[in-house]
Length: 175
Image (tube, rainbow, N blue to C red):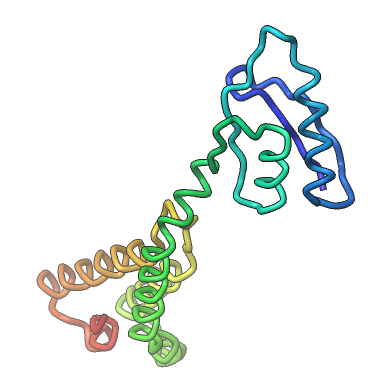
């Protein structure tokens, strides 16, 4: 595993080394090496790392008197876990509601014409919306799926207002 210790403000890498283990002792040696490399006029004012226990213990061993905080991503990931789980559950429930899309597609296999093509394209839009998962915790895929399905449903409603409701779209508009 590659370990990189860098100065945050300048971004300069102080030490980069592959280690066979991530034990407290091995990491403490790496931290001491980085500490010794710094000129006397450069004071370390704090440490930022992920929450791995061996890192935390190594930091305490080498920089006992300095503040040590977890990286912001780690905090945000932990804070977002309940939201992520709720969103994941919502997406699962939405997927259950549109499981019948394959049956609609099968019913159109022998059909041709503008109406069948339109329904097929709506089915493709639904399938496409199912595969876009986003990047949690910053992108809630359940909310994104809900938004896309709502847009598809609104489009079907607009078509129904303008042209009447095609019989083959009845099953599509239940989500």
